[in-house]
Length: 354
Image (cartoon, rainbow, N blue to C red; front, side):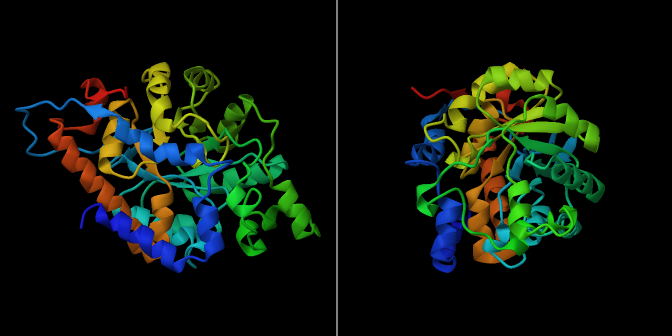
């Protein structure tokens, strides 16, 4: 079936998701220029394959920020999976584990950290929003570390949540049992749900010192997500980050931000092997992933395709989605004349877009 499964899952998700949920998941910020470009730009790169290389077998295994993975195709952090299926992130974790994918679990998970961790037989990281009530963030980070998260991913591009015209605001109205599932236990006694929600909104005053604070709280490596500039990547490393995730938040934050594909080479060059480099934003195939690896990424993260897979088929759908991209990557890696994903960045494989 190959990559056709992603098309089928997208069609199925459009058929089964309530229109308001579909709009929320799919929306970008502003006029959605970045949302549209993020997918399109990957196809502008061209490849210079090598010939007469032994590619009878290829090796997809990588190690990223101390986490060993069977392949470099992971799942990006996304909020409120229970809008797509009743099991929510529990199903996503199960599907990720079946397919060998790294799962990055969102702070805005609609299922408890512990339940998700119990379903994850493979490695997972915890994405961090630093909230206005820092005690909430500290409590969640400690719980994630205790539950088995092997790294933290601090989102740095969301001091405020971007406005989305398709949802007439920043997000869909999410029930309390989704929004507060991991937060209510840490609320001030007697605090109303509305006040709990306000305390859990992003803190726009965080800075580079947050990286060291999170490492101190958790004992885990901290990566910074939302990096589109080489100088920002370098500053994050100097502040103690174990790596960065090149990302424009799926086009959901600052419209007209640079697509991840066009920022990746600069960021990877600035990191220069001193930390991990991951990338998300518009990756829809193994060929997109190969371009990303050739530009210097150590791993890639899938976003919306996983939500469509979740809506279409739960945990099995998620596994099928990741498996399709992984298999496609193995195929095109061999066609490129490369035996291992670990050497692709040094092969001179990718020609930048004209």
